[in-house]
Amino acid sequence: MRILVTGAKGFVGRNLCAELGNIRDGKDRSFGDLKIDEILEFDVDSNPELLDEYCQRADFVFNLAGVNRPKEQSEFMEGNFGFAEVLLDTLKKYKNSAPVMISSSTQVELDNPYGQSKRAGEELMFRYSQESGAKVLVYRFPNLFGKWCRPNYNSAVATFCHNIANDLPVTISNRDNRLSLVYIDDLINEMVATLKGQEHREGDYCFVPEVYSVTLGEIVDLLQLFKEGRKTLEVPDMGNLFTKKLYATYLSYLPEDQFSYPLRMNVDERGSFTEIIRTPERGQFSVNISKPHITKGNHWHHTKCEKFIVISGKGAIRFRKIGEPEAEVIEYIVSGEKIEVVDIPAGYTHNIENLGDSDMVTLMWANEKFDPERPDTFFESV
Image 1 (cartoon, rainbow, N blue to C red):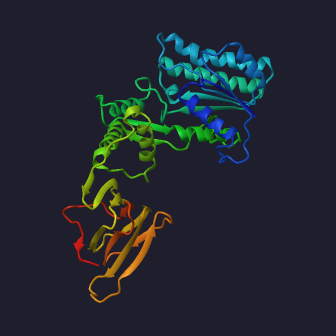
Image 2 (image 1 turned 45 degrees about the vertical axis):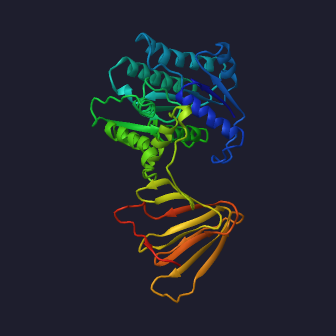
Image 3 (image 1 turned 90 degrees about the horizontal axis):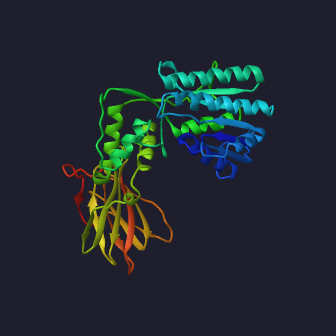
């Protein structure tokens, strides 16, 4: 299958071409037996003669070309209707009745030049379908968000992400204003599904089923939480799909010299202990470094439980059940050569000893983040 993408360098086009390339190259097999032979990319700076060539050869057309922020209002009609007309006329010229998808907008319901130009493009597409018999897929996009979206252009989410990531001010006229948002990967999955005839459709229009309704205030609050997380180590609930997708979007706007951030290492003569991540519902992750022949721990918990994973070095993890002074000491020998998880149950005092001559590195998970007011940690030798 040869696929023509107009507006290939835009936000949606760039993401679509990247995913089509993954499928073509066999890097993404989640769409089953879909076979893509060639991606024909066309944009405003392409040689106009290429459009003739591509319209002869294309088996499917994604028309993502359009104008959002022109200098003159007349450019709305020229960019959103005029190019679509040229594209369809070129397809008719070569008697190519390949399916055509067009990106419209929910703003067609508004009486403004942009919405009017998009509605004109829709009507043109439906007439073309009647005349040529070609299948058309008209999508009215709501607000979109995701990686590679240009800030300070036509996306509030992109602008918020960019400004907060770069320590710039954010201005909101009304925190309660609500947006309908579609995440770019959900849109791209829907668009790829159209290649297999599996689009979601209601009447004349197609749609992306995953739409999030979120206020401007909720978006900014989450983004500020993401930013502060580098200091607090807090990661919000990624089980919330919108939070997960907004977090991925936010990270894509980080300045390239600020991908890393320091952690506080608690260092003493025994080694170090460093918290990595705290979550409100999934506990806390840390890394522990023990110097050679050092023993750490010798404490127990009522409710807190942990998992230890030695990833470098060799050690022994020992347990004794609380309340039974004569209880047998249980020992597990662990090392980075055979990575395994050792559960630390409540009610057992425990320690970990570095048996080697080099530092031992242990990843640790606790089922709750540390609360200094209620540490649930009681010292007692194993």
